[in-house]
Length: 179
Image (cartoon, rainbow, N blue to C red):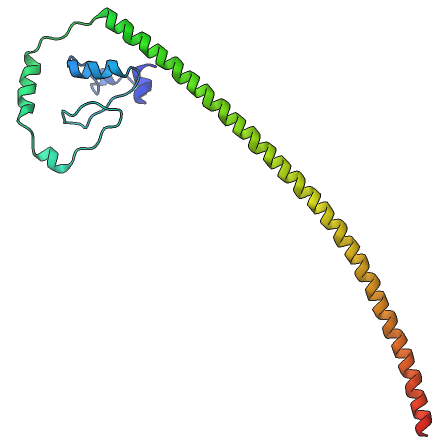
């Protein structure tokens, strides 16, 4: 992975002056320990490089430690370290191995996600089929009840008609008896 891609940049940060090659042995050791991973530290601090840099507090920015000046003088007087071809090849090999491991892990995660997606889709299809079946049963039951209700309604109407006729006849008999 090129450095620009790792940093999320689209232009050459070295050319623009935002990045520079380091000669500090501790920085180089930290970078070699984690090739391909962007290491950060708070701006203006001498804290160790990490994957996640904590922001400095206002108090820590105001109070500069005295050791910082001594380190700066020592770093200025220190001879630039020579690059070791063997360690660079080892770092490149380590990076390539980690890249393969990341690719393998990514493929494994994608396979697990696909399996989970298939399982979820199967559960959705099963639930939809059950819903459709239940809707069909509901429609059948509702139709049967509707027919039963219609039959009961006809019986109610027939009873009302029978009662109306019987009442008219009985009232006529009652008037005859009173006369």
